[in-house]
Length: 443
Image 1 (cartoon, one colour):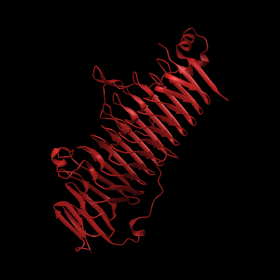
Image 2: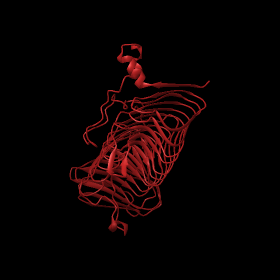
Image 3: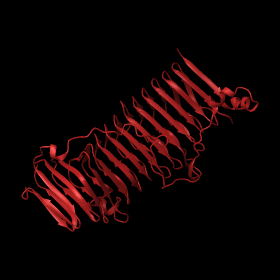
Image 4: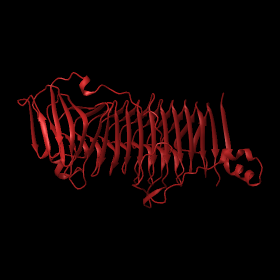
């Protein structure tokens, strides 16, 4: 049965003013979240229990430790207070050179090797070259800080599997000032180092340990290929640009990603982002810095995924596509937008929103909650159609709850769409099913 409720918030406020209908107070109570006074901040961090963040989905089952594995073709690298100890039984196939605590590995074989990395260096690095053969890095309580480049830099390798050993804590940090962005010289052949952890090949994460990354020059984790998160916990505690930046598909299937960044939390330049499991908790602090964004590909959230996003900067979006669609098939997604409109020039401005989609948004399942208390912030903004056919959706925005340039089609699902100041729905809309309450704001 179709149930659509329209409520005028300004009318309800008038009734309250005259002391009638006190039971409606809870219905029109405004959010206590105050927007920031400036365009962006770099002093915030994810706090469990502060909406939209909590600790759900972060208890990982422990995977086997190193002693419980029967690994073959093992090479160990241990950083030990100013020196590096290496055990390499395959010197004819794997060359390892050191310069201080900077380690360069060159693999000249199609054999799959297992590199166990441990120890601490305050001014070292690990760089790997090799064939297209798969390589595994077992991070075993390693801490690498590099003052001159990436902490780990994977060059000329097709596929790297990073195993975060159960019960271990691992740390990677670069430093400001080195050549960490692509420029004309690098385009002519110079090696790139676009993040504290950089890989030219596909990068996969597994295991139940943790990896904390600080990107002080550019991105925290940058991949010129596919990034796949299968298990483990990755914490980006600082990134001056993107927390995770990829040029190919990003697949989050399990584990935990907790990202604090000045730039985008997760950004894909050329392909899709699919979140089918695990948890993403993302906080961005910069102007026009988005939670999850793709330049060319679609964004899809599915199955039992948990996504929690808070964007503080002016003009920022929780989820954003520049030329493709956003699809919800399941999961639980929570987005908070605190910034206001950012204007570069009279005809160049950016309105904050929970979701900004270039083509269409299809909500076919799951739960979506958006709170946009920032002045003029929207819930959803689409350059084409928005279709809601199932699931639960709750939007509470300062400006329009949903703005569409195409048509909003509500065919099913439940929830609320609310604006504090204006019409909850801005644009053409067709309501043929579902149980949705629409609350228009005052003017």
